[in-house]
Image 1 (tube, rainbow, N blue to C red):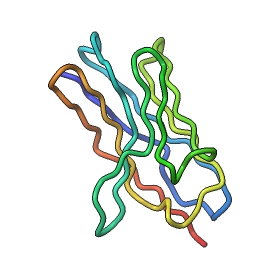
Image 2 (image 1 turned 90 degrees about the vertical axis):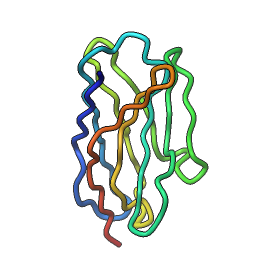
Image 3 (image 1 turned 120 degrees about the vertical axis):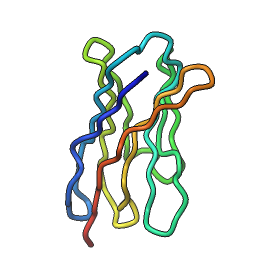
Length: 115
């Protein structure tokens, strides 16, 4: 089992920055993929950024150049640095890990960007 706990969300003005974190614990061997997803009210959950076990990153077009995903394997942490935030970035941000056919999700952290 893998436990994921997000933190770092909050309220920020448009143009500001925020970093959300995801602490992973449990049986972490073999994790192939980790990513950040978000879900705004009334919308489907969408992939924001991902990073493979080999360090390959992928970003949604809407956040390219503004967000950076990173991981610290020594601390079992996943991060999402968010710069130049926009009101449309407002959502609950979730951390996800994948091992084989299994997916693990955190409980989410709210990010609100005011205009």
